[in-house]
Amino acid sequence: MKLSLPALLDAGRRFTAGPRRSTTPSRPASPRQARRGFFLAGLTLATAMALHPPVVRAQAAQDWSTERWVGTWGAGPGGPPLPANTHVFTNQTVRLIVHTSVGGNRVRIRLSNEFGSTALTIGGAHVALRATGVGNGANIQAGTDRPLTFSGRTSITVPPGAPVLSDPVDLEVAPLSDLAISLYLPGAVGATTIHGTASQTNYVSLAGDFTGAATFPLDRTILSWPFLTEVDVSGGQAGGSTAIVTLGDSITDGTRSTPDTNNRWPDWLARRLQITLDPVGGINSRIGVVNRGISGNRLLTNPPEGSLAGRSALERFDRDVLATAGVRYMTVLVGINDIGNSSATAPLTLDDLIAGYRQLIARAHAKGIAVYGATLTPFEGAGYYSADKEVIRQGVNNWIRSGDEFDGVIDFDRVTRDPSHPTRFLPAYDSGDHLHPNDLGYQAMGNAVPLELFRSLGPVYLKSTAQVRAEAQTGK
Image (cartoon, rainbow, N blue to C red; front, side, top):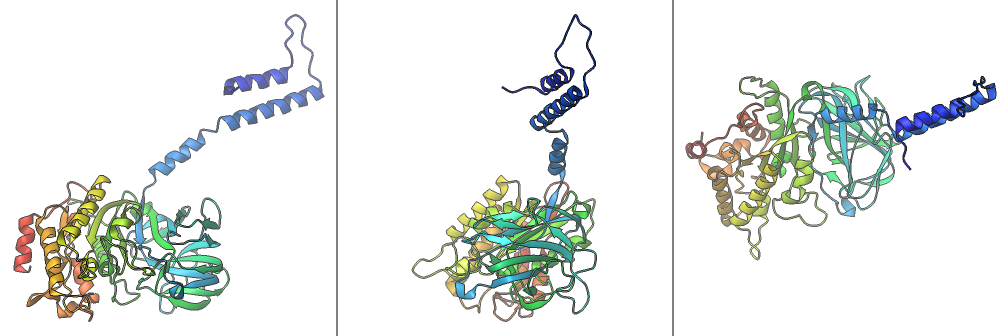
């Protein structure tokens, strides 16, 4: 039988007062009776409180529901690699460096064991501001180290196939700054969930837990991000902000850009957003840029076993786009690897790619996300180029420009092609493999993104089909 709170409290009062006598004057309770009554009343009150939690819990839920989180950094995970190619950490700490896009005063991280077949134990985790200056690559700024917890615990075991979010901590994070995320990995741990092309030096310690060490005892460096897939911020600049997810392949990932310089095209977009203040147009600096490019990634199919190219864009969309904190916009630059890897026995068709793009558009729109199509950049001279495949690329670009199915167009092909030889990269932008831009090419791409696409107030700006066609034909 369930009792209400008033009934339980009334029962406590009756225990304290003892049995009622209506005709005989009551006698003062003895010390023993008083102690017994006090004990019973306290026991009753404790029972009532357990059955009726204090209202403060509802207030905590309300605080949670009003806190706005936005992704300031992210990476798309791939794996698992073949055993011979797997990084193994043995009772070591990894210190991972990430570059923020938007700032805030609270921070949390997302870790992933989504490609692991066994449980992943995180023995400890810290976040800090990276030290500035030459020679301080793995060191952290004094006074900024914050231990992280997961579900209130300093360590956590992540089941195979699952991600985890850390609990938030207070930390002033500036936009366009470096954070150091340190993870202690007890035992022998294989990096089965990993972003393989970080273009960023990260650090592995000597044996031991050095998550909070200001000076990091170095064993080796790696150019990848194991287990870490997102950093979110809230408060401060991030209050009320939104995020752009750049979904793509190696050209979004920044392959062949100079390591440790943040020269990927999404980095250049983030810089532009930070210096643009347009209260009339609604463009502002409170927009995070989360890079979900994965080298080798495809739109429709998955790579061979052991590849770090990630699952297809269609498969990873929910995890890498919808799960991103604060996402409102998405750019799509993927498909060149589908075209390049098309075989003579099972050739890819333009209709196949268009059907895949339409799925991304529909799934984004179902969640209120504006999606912008980016034209595929030139690739003549690359190892998997052919004239037949170039026809498919041109067909994709013509459909993106004229189809009116994306919410807007980013014409990277127009920006990067050689006007005298449009099927090739402009030589000044070619990294040398005729497939990926160099630093200057990535900068040109980032500078070519129309910021009007990301208006935070009023309707989203859309280039008209006629305008896009005219620009493509004139080479502007």
